[in-house]
Length: 358
Image (tube, rainbow, N blue to C red; front, side, top):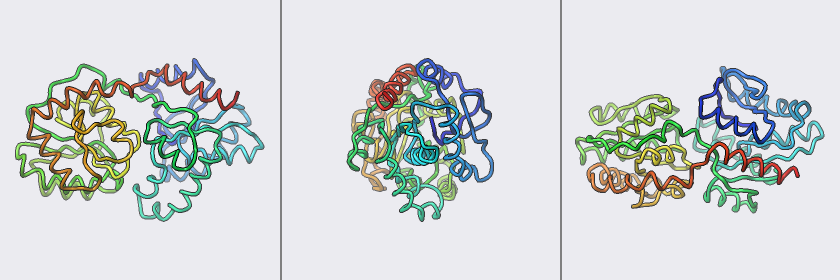
């Protein structure tokens, strides 16, 4: 398995369950970034220029594993890791099958994330990703949205199944909605999350719900947007840079709804977390959000970048406790189809690998 995911060893209890389940199905090596390392995890320690070091070293690292470990397949977390795997197998003269996961729109990482320099790389990155998808031996998608992305480039996935998500902190008993209405945003403060649109919507919504509050959790390149919002609405806005998973679950319990105003979104893990905690979602009709959220069923959906509509939706859900309660009552049940046990995920991955290598 090859991915940009950052791990910290020893693993959390639920992540350990995932890799124990995988170990029962396949002999596994994981190339990623993080702290520590052992026989299974070959990690690049986080240091200055961590991203550049990871990508520069990835092809030779995969090549070494192809020669030493001799895997039956390489499972790549995205098209970019798949490109490195394809280059590695060409360099060492192997035909090891490459299975690439599509969790979201591969074009987002350069267009709606990070610095302007990344956006300048978009044309090259797009060509690399598309070539990798077409040259890979198989593509796995995780939702109807990601399957649609693959269909758009003329490919058919070998399988469609959600990845295992570490949701243990979110699966306890659902708590009642809080007395004080609060909307919660959890995510990176980047262009694709539309935190600027959220700030403008809150400036419109806050006067209509004077007792309500917006809590923002996250960090990124758009912190200036949040700082200005805090200066404008200090009594109705709070900001926390980072929370651990258990703390996010508590933040959801103390909130009326999650708000996700994204310009682009893949599977939307934070949506799954919110629904597990019985919290409705105010989101945009982009990416994988409509796969998880039904307008008027377990949340409210608005068109992307429609600031006025987002503000109106926030006012509706924060001012109308009956509406919020009805949406919340259906939230937990609606997420059941998206929950996979570690064992189910491991079996599905093994089956996908066997289809390519058999």
